[in-house]
Length: 586
Image (cartoon, rainbow, N blue to C red; front, side, top):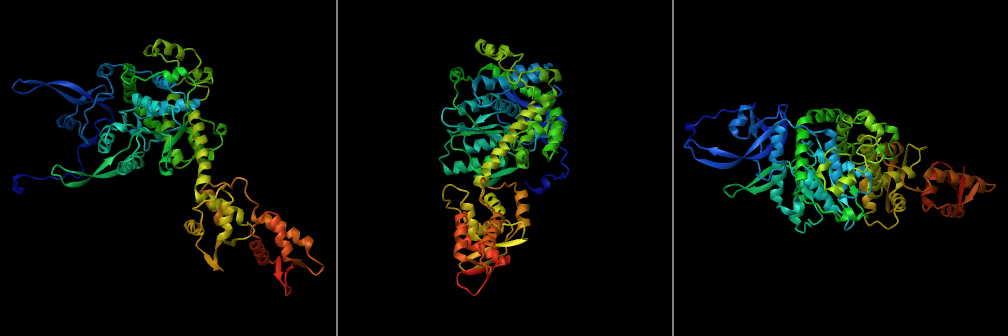
C-alpha cells in the first residue's frame, strides 16, 4: 500500500481511555467483565451462537465489549480478553442487574467461615487475615501495592488446602502448576488473576524458576512492568511488556529468599488436631463458592468508592501514630514491634487495613461491644452450608467480630510480624550486626577512634554460635566503606578505620539497629575498669607492670589487650618509660 492511499492523523491526546477487560474503574465507573453466550444474526438472517464479553457496571448496566460499543463511552480495550469459565455465575449476574444487593458484614462472615470450615490456623488473627486478603483481591487494582501471602510449615500442615480455599474465593484465581510460564504471564495480565504457587511447583527447570522469580519480584506493585522476548506472527523475536500486578499466595516447606520475603506477609501452619477439619474435603465446583464470588463482585461494584476513599486516607500515613488515628485504633495497646512497622513493612499492610476499616465502619457500635473475644461466624447465609457444618458455625463458639476491631487485630498482627522480621534480620544481615558491634566498640567520649579490622571481626564473631565463612576482613572493609567509613590506614599487617561515634549513632537510628543480644563489655566500661586497676596497682614511682595489666584484661574477658593499652596511651593514661616491661601511669 502506498502512502498516498491513506491519511495518518496523530492523536497526542488520545480521545479513548484504555480499560482492562477483567475488572477495574474507569472515568468513575466500576465494572466486572463476564463472558455471556449470545445469539448472533447477520444481515442475511443467518443465526449462530457466540460468546461475548460484557462489562457489568456499578450502574447495573451491561456494556458489550466491542470496539464500536466501547468507543461510545470513549473507551478501548487495553488487553485481549481471555475466554475462561465465568467465576461469577450468569444467574447471579442477572440477579445483580435486577437490583440484588449484599450485606457487607455477611460477605466478610461467610469468607471467614469458609477458612474456619477447612483450615486450622495456629491463631485467630490468621482467619481474619486470609478472609480480608481474599476479599481484597477484588479491590487490589485500587491500591498501589498488594502484599503476597506466604504459607509455610512442615509436611501435612494443610498448606495446599489453604491454597485451594484461596482458589475458591480469590479473584480469577489460578494454580501455577497447571500452566506454562508464558500462559501465566498473559493470564495474570489479561485477567488480573490471583496466582497460587504450591510446593509441588518444584521449579527443577532453571529457566522456569527464573521466570517465576521475575513474576514475583515485579508483581506486588501496580504499574511495574516486566519483559519477555517472544515470537511475532512472522517468527521474529520481539520484546513484549507485561504488567503482573495481582494477588499471589505462595506455599512451601523450604521458605523464601530475603527479597521475596520482603514482599510477603509470612505465616506458618501446624498440623491440625481436628479430625473433622483434616477429613473435610473441598469440592471446588460446589455452587456456594460461585455464589460467594458473585457476592464479592457485587460488593466491589456497590462499595468501591468507599474502599477507595479509605485507602486514600490511609495511604497518606507515613507514621504509625497517624495511621492508628485513621483506623480508630489505640496505638498504646499494640505489642512490641510497632517501632519497626514502617517503610515497606507498613506499605504492605495498608490495603489490608483499608479492608479492615471498611468492615469496621459497617459494624454497629453496639455489636462491637457485645461480641465475645473469640472470633466466629453468625452468617445469615448458613443455608449455604451442609447441616453438620451449619451447626458448627452457629453454636456461638465463635462470633464474627470481637470487642477489638478488625483494624486493631490486623495492626497487632502487623506489629508482631514486623518485630519478628526485625529480629531475624538482626541475626541474618551482616551490616546490622556490624553497626551494633561498632556501637559497642566506640566510646562516646571521643569524636572518632581508629579501630582495627581484626578487633571488629572478633567482636562480630562473638555474636554467632558457629564460625561464619562470610565474615572476613575483606567483607568488613567493604561493608565499612558501604556504610560511609572510608578513612583507613595500614598498621603493620592490618588496617584500621576511623570510626566516628556520631556516624555510628546516626546509622543505628536509620537502620533501626538494636545492640546485640547479651553484648560484650563496651569499650568505655573496659577503659573505666582498666583505669581503676591502674590506679590501685601502680607502684610508688607511678609505674605499672605491662604483663600484670595484660593478665588483668584477659581475666576480664578482653581479648584485645594490646589494643586497649594503645587506647590508654593515646588518652595519656599510660606513657612509655625507659624501663623494660613497665609503663608510666598518668
